[in-house]
Length: 189
Length: 221
Image (tube, rainbow over all chains, first blue to last red; front, side, top):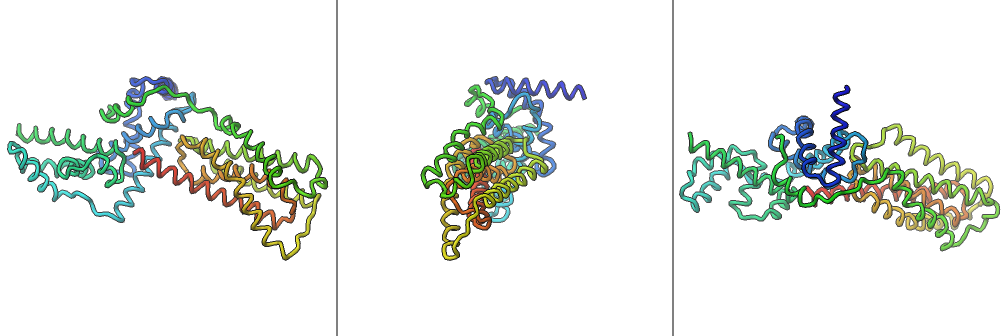
């Protein structure tokens, strides 16, 4: 109980420092709360990468409304209040997309994407790339293929997927990191 | 995932100016005190003071209107609190807020009807309801706009409720001035036109808040 109170006190101090413009305090807050937020989103989102995206989105939303935190009130209820909003928006956009749209990019497109990419980079192993693309979570693959294969700007991707600009960039860059890692493993294997 | 992504850090670092925490909701609601006063005085000044104000006297006319305007401000405070993430009103607090607002309106209407009874001629009854509904709704729009301005940077967990409370507060404040202009004290008239205007403002507030939430979500996610 007193440990929890100490942790709450620390979170309040970090939050106040963050409101005063301390980037490291923001990073410490992230480290302290990301896992808990991940568990919160796990109740409704099965896809781990989507959960990670939602945690990142929560912190982005938190950053935009950081002046609404009133010290010395506990930080957790405020953060989870923001997380509930992010989760609600996610559910709503998911429902809308599920009801009205077919996926823009499915795993069959991975082969086509690999074909297109390897055409311009002959050193790439087409099959390894297609296989790596298929292993990516659908949301990241979608953003990556739309940007790198179809040549859409991030603003266009954001509009098509009905997500924010930062989320579009984030998904594509994460897909790239994952692809590099998967292709590196494939080469070594 | 124990670290923020580079994109997130970049977005945060780009806009890391120090911010001052918002004041407590009740203190922010007090910002609207001058507007409440303006509505209280401005509506009867613009449209004319009620013909039978002498039957009510100073306290039952201006005193009760001031109480109603202050109640409106308190409801605005509740709406602003509802707008802070994780600080939503409990069901009991919400019920008390709604019930006490309705009770106050009913009580003021009853007292006014007792001290300054007016019998409306049937041929103008409907027309006056529509006229008062329009004027009362229009009078509430500046108050609703001011609350929306105060609430713009908030992130309510229940936008419908936060917006409806904002509309209720704005409606109460505007109607405090309206009752100093409208001399018709018939409860049916007050319920339909003045109460109707408050309901319209509540619905407008709820829609506005919901729209703002969607718009901010599209812009910011």
